[in-house]
Amino acid sequence: GVDFSRSVVVVIDVLRATSVITYALANGAKALWPVSTTDEAFELRNKLLAQGLSPNTIILGGERNADIISGFDLGNSPQAYTHERVGGRTVVLTTTNGTLALGNAHGARHLLSASLLNAQVVSQRTIQLAQAEDLSIVLLCSGNYGQPTLEDSLCAAVMARDIEFMLGADNVCYLSDHAIGTRMMAEAYTPNSVEWFRMARHYNKLISKGYGTDVQVCLQQANTLGVVPIRCANGYLV
Ligand code: MLT
Image (cartoon, rainbow, N blue to C red):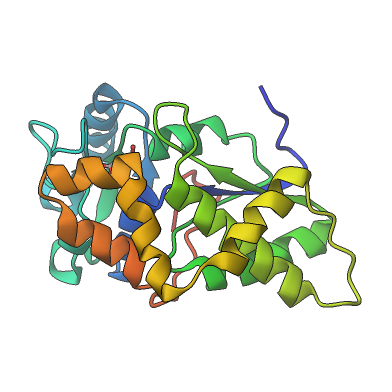
């Protein structure tokens, strides 16, 4: 119900949807379609096949309850989206919270996604887009089943801090109260703060389900990928 028509919206789902998006596009996926439901994913694949794409150029990816969906090619582990697997292919992704948040932000003037893996380059691009058309910036944390999550808040915090810093003293940046509070997290954060996550709910769920490597990849490789996922005129992320 929020009007995003004058906003650059950056959707964040560190564990793990937007980390997967970052990996897939960094590894050469030519298009990434975020969809909300598994039915939509299968329907979109059929539509793309009808448009002439060959079956081996379409990858269905995502999760329900953190695990791969029956009939899908890949789950929701970022490092599975290798160049060999997704390079030059179209990825259709559905996840419990992250792709839902992307769908909810469809009215955005510009729609991007960010994770800790690419937060800095996305911040730079977000500023350019906002300044070019005098738009507001919305850092939209996907959270988990409607609840905020520590990792998404941390990514937003780092981005709010970086955006304010990159704008510099000559540009006034009005942060919302929530953004000010969140940014304080970034000030307190050090590489050792990865310990914070031992209390976090979705982190613990992923660990208990055997996805410890994913968690490490998503949380400990900050700003290692230079890709900026952005919705193009055709509706998918590139
Ligand atoms: C989500 O979108 O809810 C997450 O990516 C869930 C997950 O970690 O698999």
